[in-house]
Length: 221
View (spheres, helix red, strand yellow):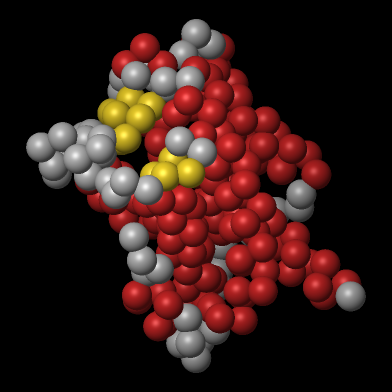
């Protein structure tokens, strides 16, 4: 998997100036990448999910194929590009006044789903971590970008579901990523497990959090 061509070239768009974000973006991708790679490797070793050998190269590290490693670079790079474009071309925040019900709703929903799926490793882990991170963000981080990310994620979901649909067998004879049916709810958006969307939200919001945190520190200095 290669670095997305369009975001790479359009990073130099005069309005977006995405390349100026790279000094914050790539450290944020690295920080979240460490966490998610460890999580991914552990879940693979535990048999929660695996990879179809028919669709991947022979190289791997820590039980993960090289393509999976590249996923944690290319997906956040392209997704945060969408976030940056929306900030540049549509600077308003129509969801700002809905911050409290939206954020508390996500926290409550994740908490309830975590309780209902406590016996399912992928589901419960995803909902607990997402709900916990959202609670932290709600309590300690002012809404300077939170609802703007919510809006961006609604847009990101479109290519995310298409790409993940390929990986989960929506457009192929067999899935690339194979899930243990005992470890997730079994509710899918076409072929994509609902947990994947929540997993993606947590991953990308984490990248956004660290990027904005690093930017704030840069301004202080």
